[in-house]
Length: 73
Image (tube, rainbow, N blue to C red; front, side, top):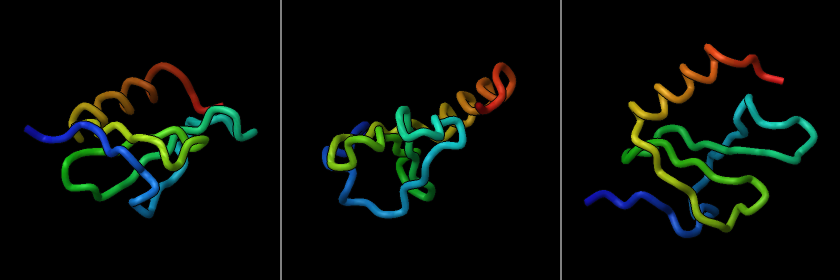
């Protein structure tokens, strides 16, 4: 079974803030590209906290749904 979380997401480098995150630093979601098992997603306010690993196909569907329903702020 594939692990669905990374316990300390700070062990990985290359995180980028989602373009859908709040620009004032309040609600920031970060993702990591190129991770073999899927797309890691974390809260930027807790960089040593866990990250969820979302299957790539599910992440793509999620992003497509966001783009079709609401423009970035």
